[in-house]
Length: 304
Ligand code: PSU
Ligand code: MN
Image 1 (cartoon, rainbow, N blue to C red):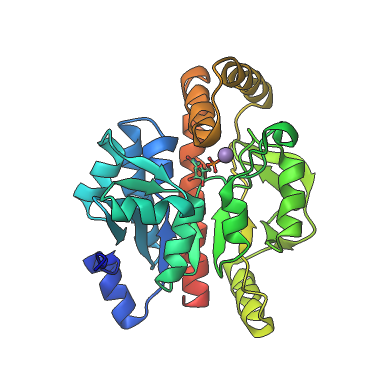
Image 2: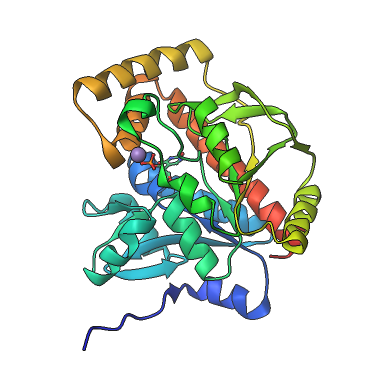
């Protein structure tokens, strides 16, 4: 007989929130393990959870530890994700492999969103969404975040898509995949480190309450079988010329060193963190916190 697997494990805090039906915000873990440098990553992970709590919602950071899916992490587990050297990066397709083989994996937007919805959580804060990479016409490198979000009832609060990507192509794919996009207090689609990617959105929303009513309209119309993106621009962006310089050198280095597949995004983020005099790190931290705060406000406004 084949092995059976335990259901996911909830933290006491998340269990308590589920019991009384109070709002929960899913938080991803790849941002901690592969997106931010040590030791800042652990501090930021804790601060982000605290921001969610202060605004009246419960944080559920999601990850796989030693083959067990965790919805909500203890401080020790959060530290493991931040500091352990054996933490993999799992997209949706890797989840079952990690669980069956008792591995430890941080979860990407795709995998976190999948597990959140599996557990009845429908609001999710991240940094920047994955998308279509530059040169994807040749490399076919498109993040599984997009296809995952095309099948999940979840609202993702992000600072747009990462500026290392082909933003125009990513917006086209979002349209094809029926993933709704609204700008939070802006029509300028944000570009992660940059407040404005140069692309214009069709819809602007002004408040968490307005987003909550879009979420209930999605349910009423059954258009909640794909995700809604809330694009929340960072207030204090990276200086655009510095951004352009570091991006150009990062892309050149990635190509010279033949970096491919799931390593591309962590490689470029790390390049930014080591070549921007702390600017990319400052902006990355600001945007994660800001997205977590907005996600908590939306969760409270929609009582999800
Ligand atoms: N946003 C960040 N830092 C990150 C990521 C997003 O601020 O590290 C991660 C997310 O987990 C996202 C992943 O799902 O990058 C996309 O990776 P890829 O391009 O390989 O699909
Ligand atoms: Mn990829």
